[in-house]
Amino acid sequence: MSKSPSKSKKDLQPATELWSMYHPDQAQYSFNATDAASARKWQTKTRQALAKQIALDTIPLVAPQPQVIEEVDKKDYIRQKIVIRTGPHSLMPVYILLPKDRPGPLPVVLAFHGHGYGVKDIVGLWEDGKERDTPDGYHKDFAVDLCRAGFAVAAPEISCFGERQTDFSYLNEVPGQPAPTTCTHSSMLAFHLGLSVVGIRVHDGLRLVDYLETRKDMDINRLGAMGISGGGMHTFFSTCLDNRIKACVVSGYYSTFQDSILGMSHCACNFVPGLAKFGEMYDLVGLIAPRPMLIEAGTYDPIFPIRSVRSSVKKARSVYKVFNASNQIVTDYFEGRHQISGRKSYDFLKQELV
Image 1 (cartoon, rainbow, N blue to C red):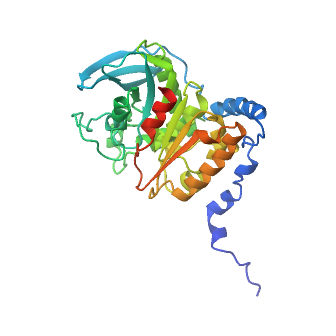
Image 2 (tube, helix red, strand yellow):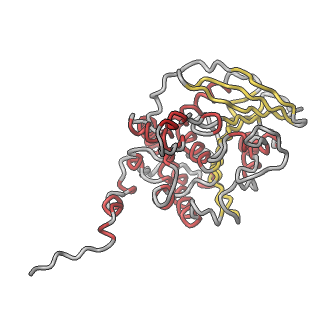
Image 3 (cartoon, helix red, strand yellow):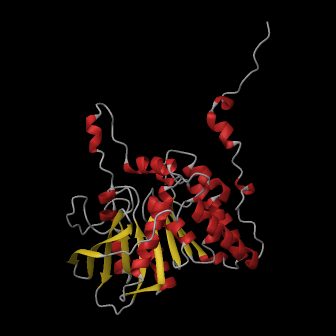
């Protein structure tokens, strides 16, 4: 009686077959330029391809039609809440923080929050809307700190959070059916339509910058971006695709797809079908180069391992070196978990934008 061929436990796992197809160094748009001229050509074709891959141009352009909802005097700065239209069926709340007693037009920073209860968590508000004056949580009210550093700050409610969550009350009619998170539901619906939540969020960010360009109190020629976690993802892809952003701070996100986003549990909103054709994060960094970039990473961040961050930064510097700009990547490796540091970031942005 013949025996069946032996099978390793690893070969029984579905991910084994999929990982065998993962070759970022052989990707169609991996960064392989050897001089600045060829790198700029790579940027042009790759930026166009990435915009198409995330389905960036799917939502029609509309006028922002801004509406001021409230204005609060916080003694050393003014906090406005506005709502702008980013698509035919999409409204986006935005908090604008303006430092007092500073002549305009002011340098501007886009502040992108991560997962949690939404934009309120970075502008000094509790989830119920009550004021707070002591920073809390992993966001540490970093939009307020940016404002106090002298920037006009635009902090949008990112799609799927806070006031932009889906109403699943219709599921009350389906016994035993739990409501999904808005992130998961929107991501799966986007995949079904050939889109991505990443693309939707970048689209919203671009429309926000379009609106900010109409304000006389802001200087978009001195525009930066900063975000943590999902907001770090937003900052990363927005800076890749929008050259109006002159410098960025990516906190609690930059690593490698292989060791973080693809290697452990992460929200579905991080994924883009077919993104593998662009290689790794350090390849996409070529779309940001040679603009200044600061990477914050906690040494005990459980979802963006510091070892992978360090190795990916090393490869990113080799990309920047092609532009003769390897010193334009700055790091803040701080002792801590998944949280904003701020130890270097505010001074970094002041140096680059003010």
